[in-house]
Length: 521
Image (cartoon, rainbow, N blue to C red):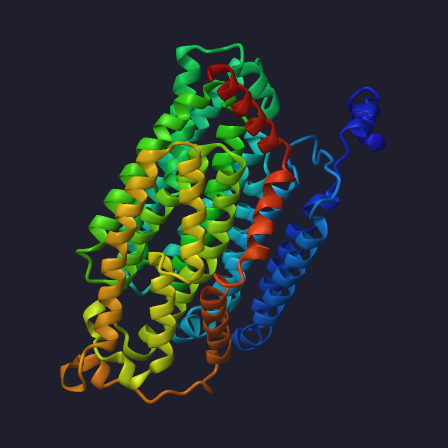
């Protein structure tokens, strides 16, 4: 502090007014400590890493989730000179990211062991991606947003190409790197325009105030650049081209994390930038996101019908799911924002439950083709039941958790008169049910004599193999929450609403939207 004051001419009051408030990132600190511990243990050899890395990861992520729970409804204070804010919205999305990493690791160990890749190195990179995603959820400064975004992106590139002996994994990483680098450059250019328009400010609050009096073509251009980056991160059409190839070629546990953790961070970024910064362009960006939502729901669910690979089908499914979540973003109401948070929490369990089943099937057969699931109920009822429940939930079949998440989104959209989005959402939900049911039909309806050669050669069930117990725990946990969570969903509704009511940025935007609607009415 003395050195700082000397360099700044004794400007200590600045630090007093804007304290660093390091406690706001205590959950991220726990993840960082776990990351460093994984790297140190990895130096001791693969045997030591296989033994100690899993409990270290569980401890770090479990501690992060506990610290996030303790931050809930805490008094808001600026952190790190105003570049980070631990409000309820950030806590909710950071919790989704940390939970997605924990579940992804639970389903990873056996897969990584079979691939012959270092466990400690894999866990460290995944934790680095988690750090970037968690910081992105609470960043309130253009610089911190870009650093968090790149931390998440670079780690994701490494994870996508982690299967060094697999040509498809290398291809997926290269495609992801090229498209992701272009998206980062677009964001950086848009951020530079915003920096110039504000006269040298990078705080989102300062940018939002400056844009209220600066409705110029340059501002509109900055909005388009920023929106493009957000659309890339959440895999919205037409910025989705990387998704099917990356999902198909990347290691399956990595795809599980990208489908939930990275997407959750992308929606948190969308709320921070579009709601917090571009409030004066509210009508414009909502029109653009309406188009993106319609395209994503339509293309994602229709193209998924023709897929023969489970991972590729879930890739297009995730594009469609992003379109559903965008309904809540376009609404701009308290119910709409709460529906977004609720659906991301539901998506965490139903999607990762499906991926746990896919990993278990691929570990035993080495296959990813939907046709190879024919007659699976004879050999493995647990995978059949778990995958069926998760797919039904993704399709929005009652009384699964996904049904209540979609109903909440559709109700919020209808109340806000977003009739086009709700109608398209309902129609494409019916379309999605068809390809989800097709997989279930393949597993259940096929008779023993019709079963695929892969299933006929399916090995005997054994849950006692090394690394299978965590996979079983993740699968059972996700399936239980997916199946029972819909019936007991009231706590989730309350939590999602509290995430919105405890976020001043969203409350200000809701009040402004209601005032504008009242003036027009």
